[in-house]
Image (cartoon, rainbow, N blue to C red; front, top):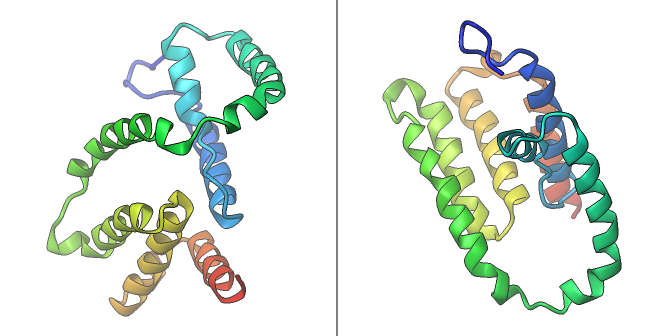
Length: 164
């Protein structure tokens, strides 16, 4: 699916929709919604026509009938699987470059990583990361490099903490 330069054409809309869904989930205080990873998994398994998405949707609707059965499963029964997934996701931490030039980006990244298990919430970790990113960059005189959307998210997260 890559072009001759090794890039994925049309990736921007997919990543943008994933970013919007993740942000909306974090702002609303729910678990984040990540569509891109599941789509990549479906494509990797051979689903390229959209039939896998339709099948997943139908199975999801059917699973709502079994929701009472699933809620009967205690959380400690699913914890080992979540810990394993966390270890797999945590492997990307080695790609964060810790240098004097990038401290305004690495410190918020590590605060985000620390905040997720500390608050037992992915959305809280993202909020800590965004708020700290804005504050650190403002104090270091790099306020102009921050995207206006990040400022808006920072204000929304701060308002969330003030009013909730």
